[in-house]
Length: 222
Ligand code: SF4
Image 1 (cartoon, protein in one colour):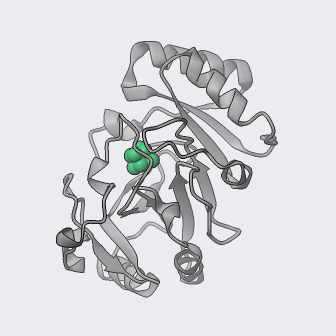
Image 2 (image 1 turned 45 degrees about the horizontal axis):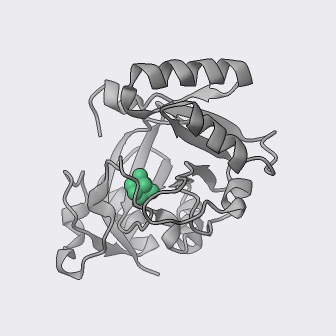
């Protein structure tokens, strides 16, 4: 199994439950969800003309839509070659669940890494049972893909971006039939907006949920 990769780099997790933890970030190429505010639009298309050598994607992509194929074993060799220290790997996108992530997460776990997937929930999650799945549901986006109940049920963490009350209501409808008792529930204000932040704080306190504030945007890192 080969995965199209846009960028690989070591950083600290900027969002959600693991905020602040050192992580190795693997961003896969390809997404058909079509969020208007997407800040990684360079990942949407796996353009054959943009295929490059592996060493080109072995660093932050600087918004370039390039990509290179990696097998699970090639990821591990690259991580070792880079002398990355983190043992937590975040597989993001794009939409990483366009791909069968079982071979990748299995091999990474066998090599001692903890895997986390960040997904929109619009594709079936295929990963090992111990992979931490963060679903950030993207509701009624341009691609018109429904958020799958199976993804919400599989989620260890549901992290929802909010700008106004209607986004909290949308989430409530989405999780109506999902048992969230053992899930980490996060609200994330959109684009550091004051109104959205106040709303997210209010709802998090009311429901004993977690606030996610995109720390990386405050400390100016990728
Ligand atoms: S799912 Fe993620 S990568 Fe895809 S369009 Fe939405 S924000 Fe962008």
